[in-house]
Amino acid sequence: MVKLDNYEWQSEFALTHRAEGLVNGLLLLLKARELDVPADVRGRVEGCTDSEQLERWIRRAVTADSVEDIFT
Image 1: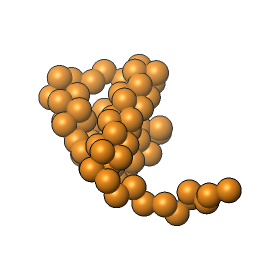
Image 2 (image 1 turned 60 degrees about the horizontal axis):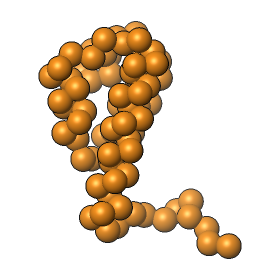
Image 3 (image 1 turned 180 degrees about the vertical axis):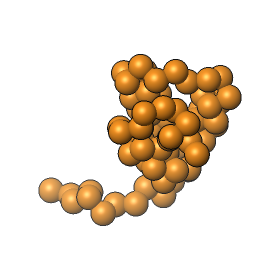
Image 4 (image 1 turned 90 degrees about the horizontal axis):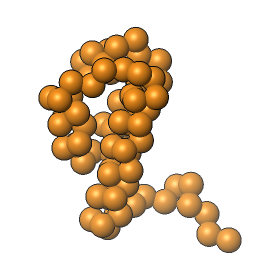
């Protein structure tokens, strides 16, 4: 069995699609939490390709009271 817990995605294809999945997950989380997402924030999220930044936003989105709490 191959251990993947420390594997770092390196190909451009993998990195791009990983980021796209994180974007979709973040937007789904915001919708599930019924947080209003202004168009400029949605554009910022959809344009982000930095997986580490997206993960930070996702962690904040779990407990944030507002969208501003996530993206400031």
